[in-house]
Image (cartoon, rainbow, N blue to C red; front, side, top):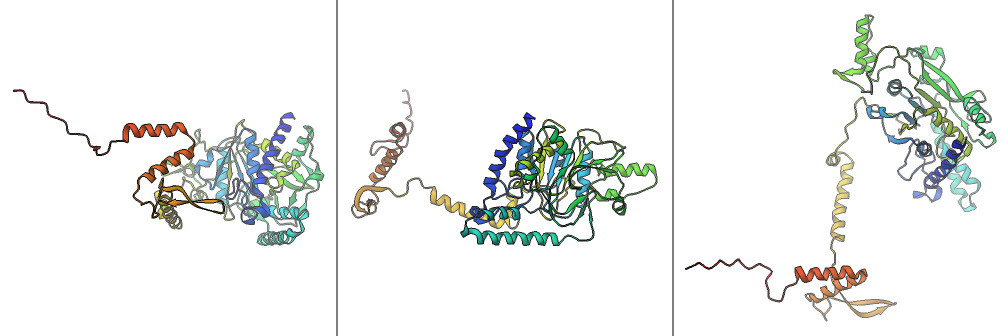
Length: 477
């Protein structure tokens, strides 16, 4: 229990710091609230109201390593945990599900944290800010609150009202949003046993679209076998907030390659060849794991933690200490190893891009051929050249330090180009150099430069810098 309290004490400053940097509100960059969803590090700051940066920091506080990814590719398979909060209300595509199930089954102890989208933290933010805002800002805040509500309603209106959306790990079902009053489940019992119960009066969890367990009829309608098992970890008045999805005994993961899954045959030898083809392409392994992959029935204790929404896991909700207790339970569910490799998968409303081979990144020179980067980089290159011409000269025109006049307490010096002195007077250059050395205040540096000049540069008037030609020795008689 002492370790948990220490964890909460160090997590609180991390949450406050992330929110102070990210939730800029009316005083933020451009006066706009940062609302980028499901990201770890937002471009306009270290976090946003809808990001997962604070949750990632909580993993790091427990000694785990966290990285950020933009797509699903073979390299992401090296991680033990993937946190995915997609900016998409619909379930993941079949291609993404197959990729992630194959990754989960390939090694024990892996965890996918899938956070549903039907939560809009910007609405909650503007509602909270409006309560204590000055009268002069009330109209602006009310306008932005109305804009956030319209965007939320438009996103929810795109979901089918009557037909549930089957997503294999869950079935998405629209329902009227409501506030959560009472929690139950394994997490609550665990917190009570540890002496850190959740104060339900301080909770601010919202439940929008429900991510419930699929029925047998829905599974059969999708021509899928009942190879997954479901376990409720956190519920609210009988509705699931967090559920664990695991693989049943004898489960064989589908191949991420869609062409391989289309091959069916009744002959056992042909089935074995097709199974091998699922994981090999052109005689090369599709994915290389740390051990030889056995295509026979196996068991795996990897899991998928399906969270209904981010109303207690995103940056803004994690300011609440009671929400951090639940986030701590989520992290403990993932700790199969002492040090985990955690990946934050950042995707937008288009979903996750899946690559069976690692995509090639263009070189720096190839960026000049990619639109619109080439136009932007060429303009930046031209501005950089102009800046070099502007700032590169060390001295510029030397200045005559004699005061010509004083205007409003500011001395105006005699220009070297004035009639009293010609521009070819090299002595003014010497005076300007001495003035620069005096302004540095570094006597040793000035003396060193003078000594260098005396030994290597200085010559008497009329003496050439060229070395005299070598004299020939006299010819003996």
